[in-house]
Length: 231
Image 1 (cartoon, helix red, strand yellow):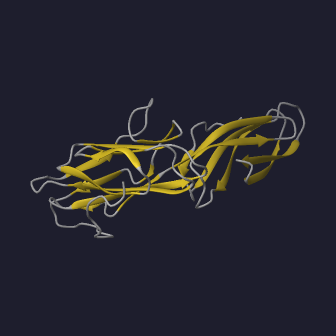
Image 2 (cartoon, helix red, strand yellow):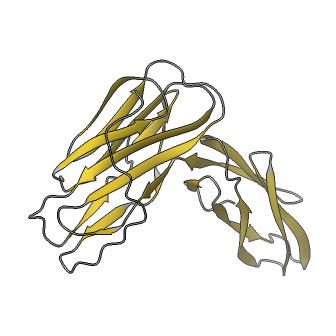
Image 3 (spheres, helix red, strand yellow):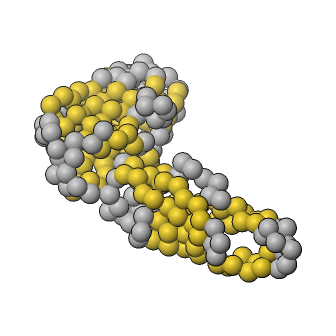
């Protein structure tokens, strides 16, 4: 039995699955437990159990750096049983800095690989409300887009061609902002931060928060800021 039913990461990350294995017989038994992920990646482990003994094993696969966004079927087989679940590859969120001073700007990049053409919608939301927001770049044509102090959104104008999708936006921190943490809202029951691919909602992985500090220690990794360049 697969114990994990909500495994999800961005592309390129490892996905691991805990599997409950039991020997329902009376005699010592040895079996191979095999995992297949999306028909592409596999892992296996040989388990030897006495009669009536149970054990949990962990099987894992490394997803591809360019793994397309979406859901993937995961199957675990033994000699006499099978179980399956669905794993998710969602977009990645990366920040140019995770510790900032009041008055600074955080640049956010949300990206992923589209396996085939489909409508793409992004809605990224966070708390508390910042001093403002600004779209910088969108890799696809939009019908509706914008940014504010607590959200950024970009809805495609029809299908987006297969390939990399990327949305870049800025979050502005007020000069009088004090020590606090800004956190992106997780996807729960269809609400929160998400990207939809052809209407299917995907959670956004990667960076989930940044800290505002008044001690002067910021962690800039890039200084690129500006106005939206692609609509």
